[in-house]
Length: 105
Image (cartoon, rainbow, N blue to C red):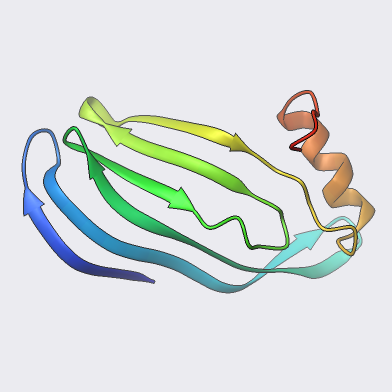
């Protein structure tokens, strides 16, 4: 669900952007069946003409991320993941493929 409150066209994508993006009640099929990771949401913004999303860290995946869509569809993401203990073991095992864990996830 995308809710754009304000948008001003610019190069490469925008001069101004204010909005929200969300995906409620996400279910994922794992090796042992379906499980819920809950909701994910973020704030939309324009940074130097690029579209930016800051993911709200209040989610069961413990996902905290900044993502940017720049010129020529160059996509950059930085952040960390620290799943809630209540999520299945396979989720915790899967995040090991994302990089070396540190104190933030």
